[in-house]
Every structure is written in C-alpha cells, then in structure tokens.
Length: 544
Image 1 (cartoon, one colour):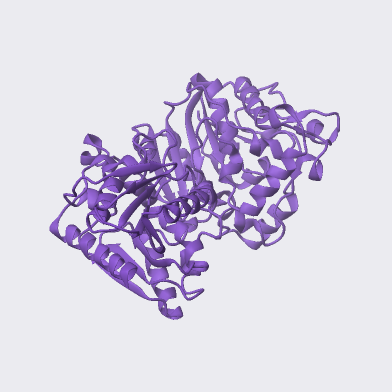
Image 2 (cartoon, rainbow, N blue to C red):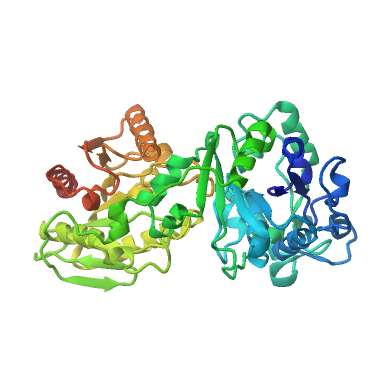
C-alpha cells in the first residue's frame, strides 16, 4: 500500500488535486491532498476523504487552516507552520512510509517535513519544481520579479516570528500576498493544456498566501538528504530531462547532485499545472515514481575525474603582471601609455563558496593573459551570480568593475570591450540597450541570450534578444559552439534573427565540433583557431 501526501503550490489547497486522488485510490493507493494553514478549509482526515479507501482514524487537522486564517488572534503562519502541518499528518498516517509530493512552493514544507521524519518517507516527488537548498526561501523561485518585490514588502510589514506573518496584523493585505488575477496564472508557470473550466476554478478558489511562508528560509539538518527523489518535469514550460543533463554536464559543480543515484526523472508533456491539464498521466507517473522507476542522469566520466572549470586553457599564454582591485583582476601588457581593455564576464550561477573563484580559474586567467599578450589590458571580474534571482547583483558588480577598469591610468577608458560567456550573456542586455560611447565591442561566446526554459526568476530586463539593435550599438562578435545545448542554441538563433531585423552588426565565429565550454573540454586546433579569430576581431574593433 502506497500513501501519497500531495502538497500544492502557493494560493491553492487540497482541492487542486481532486482529479488525481480518484485514479490513485482506484489503483489501491492512499491519497492525502493537503490544505496548509492559512490556505482555506482544513485538510480532511483520511476517513473523510472517501469511502472504500484504506483509512486511518483520528488524523488531526494538520493545518487548522480555518482557525488560523480567520480568527485574527495573532497566530503565526510561516514556513515552519506548514512543516508542522505535514509532520502531524505523517505521524497520524498508519502506512509505515509515505511518498511526499511537492508542487511549487509545496516542495519547501515537503523537504522540511522529510528532514524531520526521514524514517517515515519512502520517496520525495518534486513536481516541476527545482530542489531548494538549506537556507533558501521560496520567494527566490517566484517567477515574477514584481511579485517577489511585493512579497518582500508584505513580509516587511507583518512582524511574525522570524519574519512570520501575524494573521490580521500589519502590512499590506494583512501580511498576505494576493493570488494572481484572471489571465495572470501563466506568470507562475505555463498553463498549457489546462482546460478553460479548470483555469476558471483555479482563479475562483485561489487564496491569498501568508507572506512569511515564502520569505522564511528553509532550514534542513541533512537528515533527509539521502532520501530517494523523483523529479517530474513538465516540458511545456521548458524543463525536461535534457535540461537536467545540460546542467550536470556543463553547469556549476553543485548541479552534480542531480546525477546522484537516488535521483530519477520523468518528462511530462504539459504545463506547470499537470494535476489540471493531465491528471491521468500524472497519477500514472506518481505510481511509477513510488515504484522507483524513472530515468537517471549521469556525470560524464571525464567530468568525474576533474571539473571542467579546472581544466587547462587551450592556448599557451605567457605570464603577465596581474593586479587585484576589489572584485576585478587586471592582466597588464608590456606596453607604454594607456591601452584598450577587454572585460571578460563569466557565467553561472556559481556557488558563493566555490574555490577557486572564477577569476582564479585557468579559464579566465587564460583569457586575461591572452589579451595582455596582444597588447591590451585583460580584466577578469568576479560577480555575485549565485542564483537565478541574482542577475541584478551581478549587473551591479559588472558595472562597478567596468568603472574600476576605466579609471585605471594604464587603461584607455574610451576603448573598452565586454566579452560575455555562457549564462553571463544575459548581462549583455543592459549594455546593448543603452550602449555608452566608449563601448567599442561586445563579444559573446556560447551565450544564453534569453532566459532559458524554467528560468522564470530572471528579471525581464536581462533579455539581449530584445535589447539588440535598440540603439546604435557597438559591433558584436558572436562565437557559436556547433554541439551546443539546444536550449542555449535556440536563444542564439533568436538573437541573430532579432539582430538581422534591426540591422545590428554581428560577426559570427563558428566552432562546428565544439561543445559548450569548448576552450576547456575540446582543446582542438579548430577551437584554438576560433578563439584566435574572435580575439582578433575584438581587438580590431577596439583599435579602429
């Protein structure tokens, strides 16, 4: 007998799972759709969930939702409250071990409860949601930046425990975040496949979300860190097993955890609300997940031996003087007088604890030295792109680094090029939208030029595909990897199409057999020739 505990995302309750419960029970499973505190009517007991289903008696109301939401007595409603809800429900279920299913925000209390009762959890199912880490608040994964800002404003005025909401207390909307209005649900995840009547019901039954449930950090001891976990990835929103594979192969080292033996994956061809758009298919995948089925993603053998970021640069570059100025290193040429400068902008996200930091890796040191060996200053800044919501921080760091570079007396501040790599390419949008006169060239190598599928937390300002050609901008040198990840390649083609429509000057350097990060993972003569050509093109524009 499998017992599923179903926890939905913000603004919703157990009613969201109505079409999932019946097929799960028909297959002989127990199903507990949960309504958390402050989210509407209380979660029923197992006996109340329907005749003919194996039940338990005396399951305490795990949320007290009606009381907590409506009595105005100052009860605290935050993430810890919701974790407590689930722990009490797990304790009251007779089935020895349960499968916890978390959708959107619901994954936060699911992981918190699993951390407290790991011996009672058979498997965690993450439904179209990234796995949060210890210390991460759910607000970081809210797709819409305006909503994130509003959540922060609401939480700041509410004053509960550790930022918890006091129901009926101060702050906008009494410390609650209003649900999306009609036509706005797609901002929280693709609504593809959701029938009109189901979408209308979603809008009608949605409930304001206690703000502190989204802002209180998730605290994990690690007790549930080894529990089997299945990701069900809804491909209409752009996620999928191929995206996971890309992150494992080319992303920061922390994504290697996605290839752990405990992890399994399914693709589901629908939008972010599969309990409404594909309930039968979702119920079947939940049963298969509980049985341990699903695809695995593995780390390439070469990556197991040595992380790509620590591989040697593909060109032999001479030692040059290097100076550190705050977040930026300057690689200095053997030349008199002010020289043009190239600022190399790394991708990410990277872990704040990563060592060496990007500017100390062979990759950026190699590019900085190569530029200096050709007579220009090579600048290699670190920036704080630690998560997808951190692009504004990274943009601030880059602007500060550019100011430092231009202010150095050995730099010709009127001749600057910016060279972006990988996801750092999104940072080019600001410079393309309003290009300063001293920006003589923008270079991009295997870049992301629009947020990738599932990157809803990236602010809309970081879209080079929209910014290109918006003003009389500098020439662009774009290096493409022939064996690029499809999601990156799609944004590059969108960018090229937009550039062509707007008459932007784009030179393309192709590496037909190169992969993402070809300077490290494909140190071939083809790759070396591409780096040399791109550098020649950038320097030619700097000096013209």
